[in-house]
Length: 342
Image (cartoon, rainbow, N blue to C red; front, side):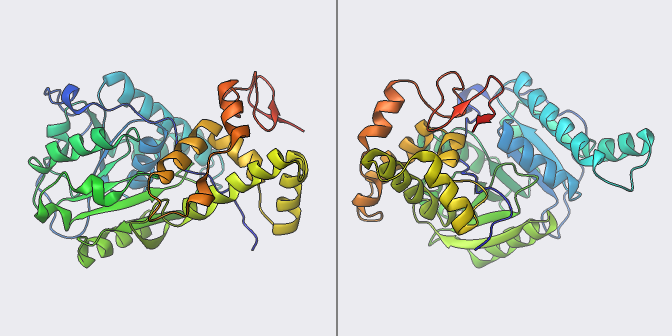
């Protein structure tokens, strides 16, 4: 199996989104809400202006959708817009048909013009066809947000969570039975504009029409969608996390060095990134967090796959989190700009 791009986990430093602080009315910026269209998903509201939320907003707007980016603070949505602006500028620089500065500016502005922002979560959902949540990986905060939105969104609106580690069924339990039929996981990968895969996660209550609608919009956004039941880690992370943990155990046992393990998997298995480089990239704290969560589900995940690893615990205690702590490193060392030192 040859992989053309790194497999990046989607657990990430997430936007802290407290529902109680978003209920004040703040108004919409950029476009006004006109009557809804009946056919398909045309209006997409993203909750969370961080890296993932901004990426989802970008590809939806590029696909011609009207996008509303919502977060707690004005500074957060403005940061999201800045992320999108910079990403589009990089993409534009690689598009051969954009030969002048004027053409580049017009292309970027045509996409940015489809993105509005708000800090009012109620206003943000009133006209939505699809809501995508991309906030902090905290079950209660996600449930609180969706419970609030359930009473404000149109009955036809689909709810989706971008979580990479939490149960979709448990998140969906906060909404009405009627909405649960329109609730699914929509798991994008980082960086969203570049990574082609999206995992669509269905619960026992998810209606086939909901899954079909999500497949359609994924295709419109240029993504390849796969479906999965609501199992811990879904498809990619369910396979990837135990793989990374076993690589850490190999280092702990002294079976091989981190460098040799990564080299073996890149040259022997065709992976673009070795498991220990990937663990550093994701964050050793994040990897540990996922494993700890799965240990609480022994009926769903074999305990031996996610058993505690003393070496990993010791590294975390020493503040070695990987690429995010370049001064201490992880399994690899990094320079001040976060570049891996071979």
